[in-house]
Length: 330
Image 1 (cartoon, rainbow, N blue to C red):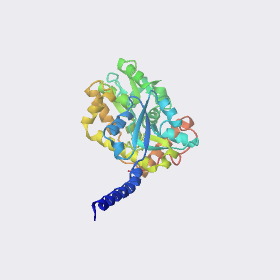
Image 2 (image 1 turned 180 degrees about the vertical axis):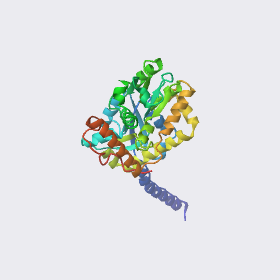
Image 3 (image 1 turned 30 degrees about the vertical axis):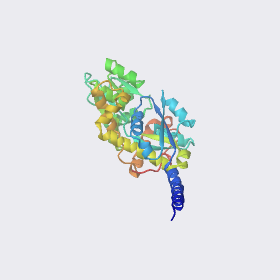
Image 4 (image 1 turned 90 degrees about the vertical axis):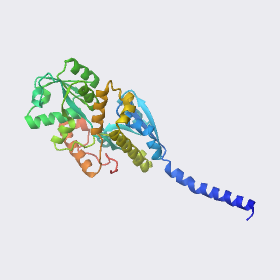
């Protein structure tokens, strides 16, 4: 075979290899996932790990992160198709589906919050909150507040909303008032509870513990990545790839303390004690498994919350609507 013929054959083989590889490369390119997050929110920690470790690239998609100053802004961007995924609780998803808006959920975290008390106010059990000034983050229909009321009613016959003096407000303000002594206790979200623990306040009961006492496993996811069903159906493998990248990031955050040093600026931890508290509580919220058992547990919790909060909390949904949870299992 002459040199010129060999050269032509090599060129043909290279061309053939390119033609075969092109569809495979396209099949591995799942496009972009646009995630909307609250600036300095806990979700940004996980997304930072995904980007720094190239977990999105490994799964065949590109993660784009858009930061917002407030949760409402992220929700508006999501509903306007300016981002593909945001983090919300599945109660919000259930309300949307009951209104005919097809959105779905995959788990992000089972972390909720806690009842944190001043150690100098003699509060050792729920009944000790009688007559106390109690701050509540998120308003009268906050699910943590409802769960705590349900537990107090069941175990002690205590109507916590009337026995204590609840004051509703934003978590940072409530934290300040607890530290200054203006409040005796607060029911607040887990990052704020962790920061208060680091400053010497006492965690009396985690909402996950209260939830479990009411018969719903503490590991039941509360928050998740939500997305429009139409977006997910257009590329189901993209949703699965994003979920795998999320779990891979959590595995790193669970096992590596060094990773948290890299995350320190994002956490805005003022000191080592705060970083350790945030790390511990974040790890407690990692969802280890997700399947039919967990979905049934969520449906049970929905029934409890629907009874407590009524239509103001769950909207028109009487039971957890079909499609609330995207069909992924791990």
